[in-house]
Image (tube, rainbow, N blue to C red; front, side, top):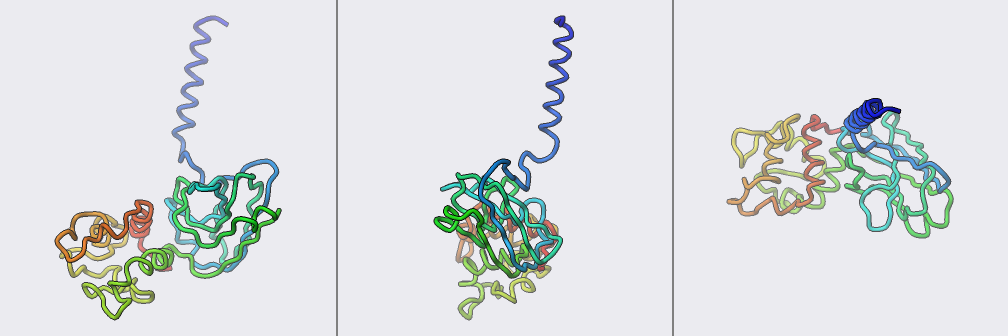
Amino acid sequence: MNKRLSIIISCVLSLALLVACDDGDIYEKSIVHDGNGRTAKLTGHFSGLSNWPTSHYLALAGFAKDNDFAVISKIVPSTSDDVDLVLSNIPDSVERVELCVLSRLRKRIYTLVSKSGDEIVTSDTILLKGSGDVSMFNIIQEQVFNTTCVNCHGGSNFAGAGLYLTPGLSYSAMVGKPSVKLSGINIVEPGDASGSALHKVLRTDSTKTWRYDHTSEIVSHDVLNLIDSWISNGAEEH
């Protein structure tokens, strides 16, 4: 092969690699390893599967010890509320199997159902069962508002700034409703996370002169991104 032909082939190969690397997300939603291994099966009736955006998703996933990034995962389909999902070829490194919320980078945000230890080590088939509302808003309600916000916003017969974030009241109190503390904007403006008071309260210094600095309440960027993603994608309730 002459030198000129060799250079041409090298350039073509380099161009092909660059195109392949730039074609879509680096991380796939479903990662399944080939080869032998254990199997996990998720069954149950779940509502709200269809309102998850591309930035976050529900998955049946396996995790190694002390690692928040899934070794293996499979997205939970939104075609039916009745779920019967099988994850095969789970490698030996996996020590925990979960139904969970994953980011686009396959990082665990919240765990909904899990099995670990002897429950998965000694079994060839790992059975997980669950049910309920797994919509994006309900996950935020249960995992964020209920655990972090309701003490000051309705959980003890008091609602700061008149804002109730308790189950059954939070959605109608926030979405499309004007902020009492930040004039001219809604608490949640569907489709506009950065223009929503909820975003500003949790992410900016807008509350530094208030009785309580809200930026110290939720420090996880993953959780903040989940809330912003919910707002940006229409702030749906179900």
